[in-house]
Amino acid sequence: MAEQNIAFNIEGMISEDSAQLIKNYLSILNGVIEVIVDINTRRVVVEYDEERLSAGIIREKIEDAGFKVK
Image 1 (cartoon, rainbow, N blue to C red):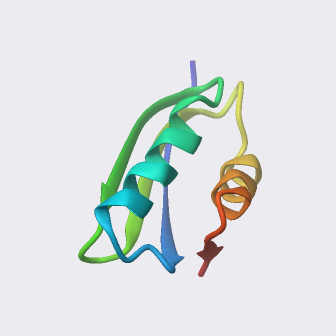
Image 2: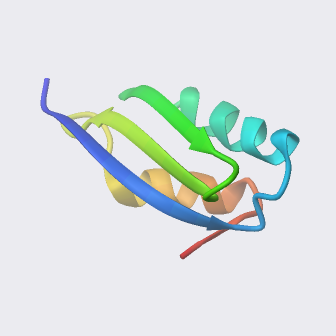
């Protein structure tokens, strides 16, 4: 396993509900180890196995949830 961490700044994540939605969307991806969402900084940190998942797919999943990644 090749663990990586990546952080995204999320536009539109303004409530605990939106933070939980993002966490739920990402947690189901094969290869995600941990998702940390900080509503105050509007930042999401994802620990993942880069042998099974790419940063681009994580970004796309956030956008699929209706948020803009900055």
